[in-house]
Image 1 (cartoon, rainbow, N blue to C red):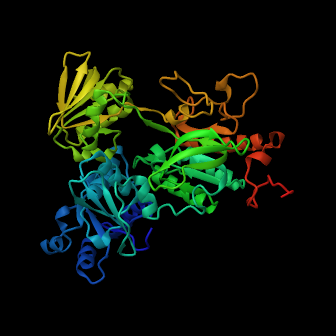
Image 2: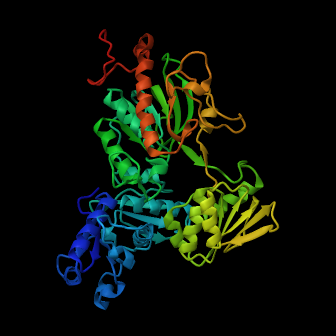
Image 3: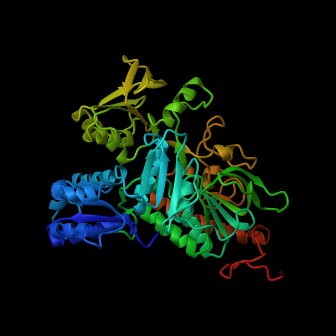
Length: 554
């Protein structure tokens, strides 16, 4: 992160309240953005003086009319956002005294980041592409959570191109940008200490969510050479929201998933863990040349080796969105793809999505609490109509009552097809009186499935819950129903362990995932000790001084 951070000015007349707001906003941004609190006179002096912030990206104020016409013209690229009066009325020790105030603050910050057009000198990355696509929204949300200033250039091209900026100079153009590419290009994750594919790792962790990073830190602390590979972005579902994790030990005021994962990655780097976020695991197989070791075949957008060697493997690959049409070759799935590419259909939802569709007709496909809460958010954000479509309602009774009070319609039906109607999307239904509904945007919130297809396709026999035609979560320890006692978190393949949401009976809690990661490394120690397996499993060419398993004959 550059020393010259993006700057947000916050204007309020109350010095005590201003100080508390700026401090908590900086904590929320995790230091990625500098927040300066000023009164009205100080604001005008700062904006018109010689020492105006070079990387000013936004102004938060109780009154958007505070700026003079001259200042508005001078700072045309700076987003001015009015915080709701409730935010400034909070009198307690914390920033917000009610969920409504917190939501107002979130929306103001999201509008600031999603509608700004800062000058090029203030930006760390320039993006080019269609701004209304699903991928564009995910990239901008990622930058928002990281506190990274960006500029957007509208262009009718396939995918999104990015030009990172370092020390005021343009970096290499990235074609078809993905979030994982930005982690490396912006220096959020440094290059691995070892060239990918050249080292024999003691442990390879597949997935960089809370469970995977927790295990990596614990294993590296024990002296095991550790690699973490991730196909999307470190943090998994934990970094997909601005909302704080309220029940995580050691953070009485709560902690955002983004901050927690940042701290975890910094800890992993200090312990010499290699993290590569642009690699996707494709196949797991035994190493024919090294007994008790594995090879993981991978695909990488940046090219490079096709496989990596692992003494042990930890599967922490989480979940993937459950598709509406599981058969990728069906006509329905074929018609759905271009709608996703243009942003008319979106899997998953962030709170900022409601900002982009005011006064529009929205359809949400899903029947759980997440779908219900999303429907309420769209309704409060000004959508003309919000409809929930689900085969089975699984949300709480209290939430169903709230939806009824807010006049949000729940239609019990099955979605059998989606049709491109130009400006809108047509949703074909089965099992209800209505057979067709039109919407400006469709959100699919049908939950997720364990990311195990690549494991099911692998020659290594790892037992999965469910049928072979629809593999489920990974079975471990007691769920294998063997006569012998299994190590906690051990799978049916020796030296392969599973933790987090990909494991059977996961509760989808960050604290639980972190605990499982640590516990799995304890099982790895027992695995290595049994009959001196460590002599064949571990790499002995350059062992860490912290590793207690050492071959003194070498």
